[in-house]
Image 1 (cartoon, rainbow, N blue to C red):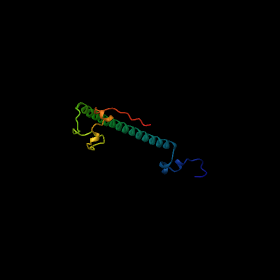
Image 2 (cartoon, rainbow, N blue to C red):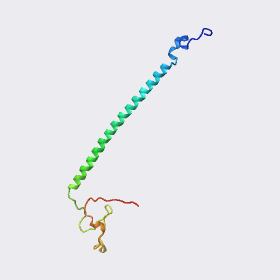
Image 3 (cartoon, rainbow, N blue to C red):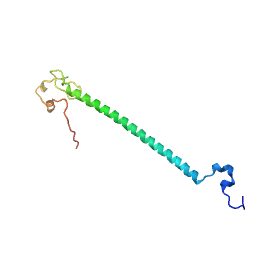
Image 4 (cartoon, helix red, strand yellow):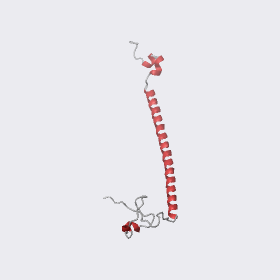
Length: 124
C-alpha cells in the first residue's frame, strides 16, 4: 500500500472491519457498560429497601410481642413463690437456711415490694 497515498486501515482491510477500534464503538461500549452499572445500582437499592422494610416489620412485630407480654404480666397479680417461713434469697434460686441469728434482721432490699422498679446504673 505504500505510495498510493493515505488509505485508512478500515478501507485497506475490509475483511477486518469488525476488529477496527473506532471512537464511536468505544463510546458505545462505554455507554453500555455504564448502563449495566446503573442497572446494578438500582437493583441493589431496591433490594436494600426491601430488606429494610422486612426488618422494620420484624422489629415492629417483636416490639408488639414484648409490649403485650409486658402488659399481661403487669395486669396479673403478683404471686409469692417464696414458701412461708423462709427468708428471701436474692441470689437466683439459692435456698437460704434459717438461722436463729437471722430472724430479726432486716435489709434494705426487704423493703422492695413492687415486682418491677426502674433502676439506673451509674458507673464512675
